[in-house]
Structure formats: structure tokens, C-alpha cells
Image: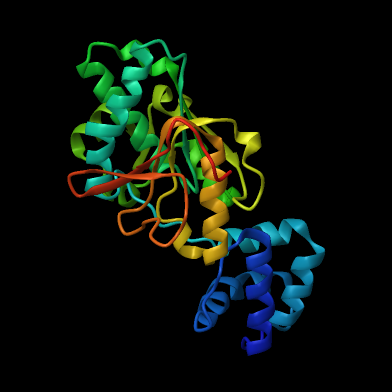
Amino acid sequence: MIEPLQQYEFEKLRDLLASVCGIVLKADQDYLVETRLTELANEIGVANFGELHRAIIMDESLLSQVVDLMTTNETLWFRDDSCWATLEHSILPSLIERLHQGQRNIRIWSAACSTGQEPYSLVILIREILEKQGRPDLLNRFELVGTDISNAALYLAQKGCYDPFTISRGMPDSRLAKHFSSQKKVWTISPEIRAKVKFQAFNLMDSFAVLGEFDLVLCRNVAIYFSEQFKKDLFRKITGILRPESFMLLGATESLLGIETDFKNMSYGNGLYYQIGKTKNNQ
């Protein structure tokens, strides 16, 4: 059984997480390290969290497990009504119009997508809008990318299989019946929806250039875990991969207040979102 977490051990593990993935733990969040990493520490047989820290540094696969355990994977279907109203009535119609005007494709990035609820919800909504317009064929011209640092979360996202509790968190019955099949209390998203999202492991500390350019970036409920400097770097890098006059959507309680960017504030109802101009200055 591992010894209780000491303050200096917490500080070492906190610094390691910040350097590896940018997550900043507050001084009073030592309990998170202890509750989330104790089982792993006991499994590998270390006597204390100092030994765990040394083991993590020596073993990249162990580091990946620690990141998985320390990453918050809280997510829901169609999370935050104002966000989805903004997408349905403002952002997505604008992007679809670009296809009508001859743009070849629309690329959307769901950053920190966790177990896939956000990008799958987005595909469902896009499909519904296009069906109402009588142009379901345009779905083929949408490309969605979902990334997360957690390999465990991405594994579940790629499978597209969810238990009843996970489904109950935001998935309306009408959409469930149309886009999922069930077997032995497991709900599986339709192959057509699943095929529209490309999932890949990605660390937000890395260069965004490898991802290509996007028309919309959803970076919702992500920045709250990072330092102020990391947030500035994050939004600067997002600016760099957005096509002219494209969009960024944050969480319902997040904003760019106090952060200098090239974005202009936009709103729909109670929803706030951001649009880049025709030219970008602060890349």
C-alpha cells in the first residue's frame, strides 16, 4: 500500500503534468493526485508518490496512463443549449452557405473531444440541417476532426458505443432512435455518423500546423484547466489554423476577456462565439 502523498511529491507531480500537457493543478488539489493515482501506484508496486514520479519519468507508457487518469473526461451530448442554438441557427448555416457558393469543403475541429459526444453531436446536427434543406449530399463535404490527449478516451470515441447512463446525459429519444442501434444495453452510433469523424491523439502543447486549416474550432471547457500564458498561446495557435472569416466556439462560461486576439465577438441569443477577420495579424 502506497504511503500518503507528501507536499513535495504533489509539487513534483503537478510540475510534471504542467510541463507535459499544460494542465495546471491548484495548490489545494493534491487530493486529485492521491485519489486518481493511488490505484496505479499500487499496481506497479511503488512505495510512495516520489517513486511514482521517478517511474513516470522513465516510462513513457506509464506517463500516458497518468495523463489519462488526471484528465477530466466530463462530457455530454449537446452540452449547453446556447452553444447548440448558436451552431444550428448562426454558425452552421453560414458555413453551409459557403458550400453553396463553391467552397470545396468545411473542416471542423473538436479539441479535447473526450469520448466523442461533442463531434458526434455535431455530425447529427449538421445532418439534420442539411436534410431540412433537401441537401443531405452536402454532408460528404464536411470533415470533422476530434482530438484528445487521452488514449483511453479516444478508444471509446472511436468505438462509438455507449452505456445507457452515458446516453441519458443529453441525447434526446428522437435522435437516439434515428442515429443509434442497441444491443445488450449498449448503444452504438450509426456507421454513417461514426465515419464522419476522424479521431486522433493530440497534445494542445504541440504545433497545430499538422492539423491543417479549419472553418470552425470548438475548444469548449478546455482552457479553464490551463495557465493564463497557455491560454494566450492556445488562442494564438487556433488563430493560425483558421481560414479567413472562420469561427471559434468556447464553453458557455468561457470568454476571451483580457486576452488580446484577432477575434471579434459575435452573439446569437444568449450564446457568444468568435469570428476571425479576412486577415490575421497576431499569429
